[in-house]
Image 1 (cartoon, rainbow, N blue to C red):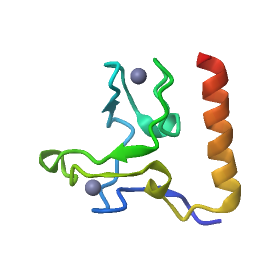
Image 2 (cartoon, rainbow, N blue to C red):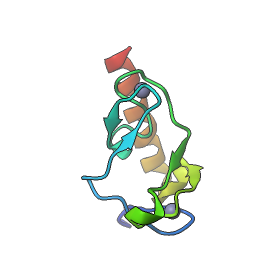
Image 3 (tube, helix red, strand yellow):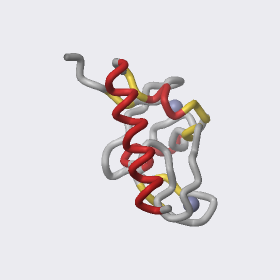
Amino acid sequence: MAEVKISCPKCDWEPTPADVWQCTCGHVWHTFDTAGRCPSCSKQWEETCCHEPAAGGCGRWSPHMEWYRNLDGWLKEEIEKIRIRVAETIG
Ligand SMILES: [Zn+2]
Ligand SMILES: [Zn+2]
C-alpha cells in the first residue's frame, strides 16, 4: 500500500507535526489532524494555506484534499470519517 505523503500541491513543502495553522477565530492547531476543520469553532477549511516563503513554503492556498498525495479511495473515506467524527465531537 502506498504511503500517504502530505505536501503542498504547488511547491511540495511538507508540513511536520510541529507546524500549525491559525483559524480566523484565533485558534492554532495542526490542520491535517482534523482534515481541515478548526477544533475550536468548527469552521471547515476547504482550502489550506501553505506556509510563508520565509518558513520554506510558497504562501499560496490549495484545496485541502490536494495536499494528500498517493490518496486511495479508502483513505478519502477515512478522512471523511475523521471530518464527521470531529464535527460530532465539537458539535
Ligand atoms: Zn476556528
Ligand atoms: Zn506551497
